[in-house]
Length: 181
Ligand SMILES: [Cu+2]
Image (tube, rainbow, N blue to C red; front, side, top):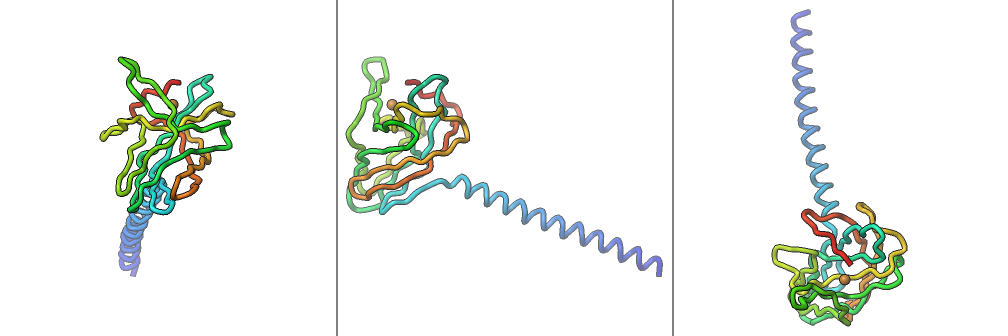
């Protein structure tokens, strides 16, 4: 009898461990899923998919900041254009492009960013495929500095798709030379 009870206890313990193991596995899967979901940070507006809009932390004493978009995709059959943006965080948001001026990289304001049908525009700060145009959104006259981990709202205005408010994540991308202006 004693022997049987011990055997039973052992069995229970083994089974308990097994269940704990499976439970742990399920928990880990849930965590992984949740993490992936937390990283999927995109917004849709009509035929547009705005994938991962982010800002780099602002430099100490800087009045300006920059917002980038990993990709801005037009899935539709009609060309669209990004015409402007606004945010309660700043006095003004402007559309910027970068251009080489001799040896020097310079910023210039543009009135619109073209979003041709069936194409994706890379607007990251530095991407393998390149953000050749250097497009970004300039936050002019920041009311508060942008710190790593902050979130804020910014509304984009498109010619065809209308307006869409995005949540911008402030983060330091890997291997960044901070945007300095
Ligand atoms: Cu700029």
